[in-house]
Amino acid sequence: MGTWWQPDDAFFDLLRDKEIANSMLAEVGGKLVADGNVAEKVKTQKKIIRDFLAGENGRQKVETWLPRWMEFPAESYTSRGGFRTADQWAQMQPLFVRE
Image (cartoon, rainbow, N blue to C red; front, side, top):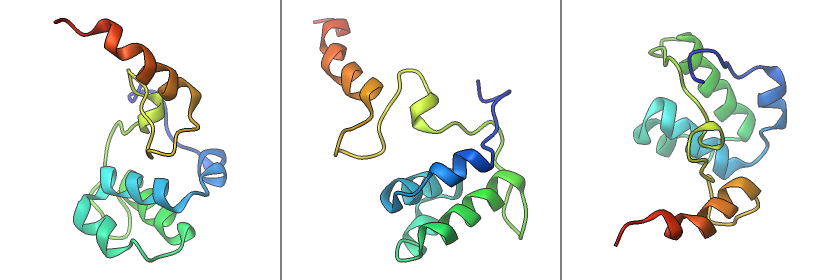
């Protein structure tokens, strides 16, 4: 999926949660970058994520990144819940674990 999918303007327009944006920033830029920008506005964090994905403004390009929601199995970025697919997987996952 990461080979074909690229986040577009619609993806970033819908990304409004600061905690999620910071977690995504940690994925593409590393913990140090995310921690250094944790107090920044979501708009700024999204711009930095875009820079990493495009390899612009001195950022090392990140190829084939997928948000956790699109990975398999799907995961949530927060412990708040609300991402139905990840919430349902969390309930079903114990059924697939070998003892």
